[in-house]
Image (cartoon, rainbow, N blue to C red; front, top):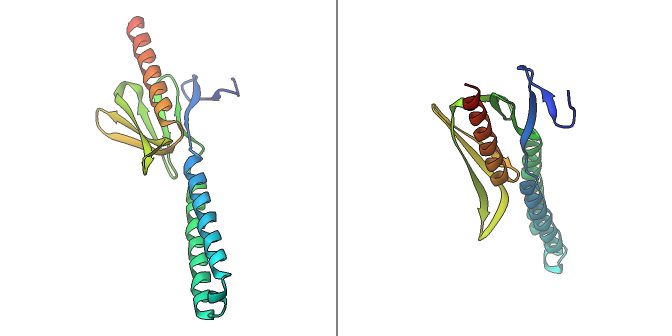
Length: 167
């Protein structure tokens, strides 16, 4: 068994990690949180707000509220598994917070990526949509979603072509 590639699956083949959790969203929210709290702290130190304790209480209440919201986001982010998509010779495994979807490669019709966009900026992370004969699955917060989509499509093509040549 090769440790650097992945772990052995139940079918005896090697399971590899195809898609990982993105750190881009976490970085963006951390920068926004630090900037917002910094502005509020800077604003609370001005002379007009220091003289009015009622305004200071509201600013500190806002800082506390933003901190609680940020901590909820951080705990939500770290509850997502690092390896979101794994694959072996027969199945694609989508790992979520509380469950795992196992999709047979034979059932997959198409794989599409959608990058995250915000105010004319396009990021490399986003969502991956996997269309099967019965259902459409998606994985969000995926790093390099377009590269993962093309990698899965290539592996699907290779798996299908090797199955047809062995028949």
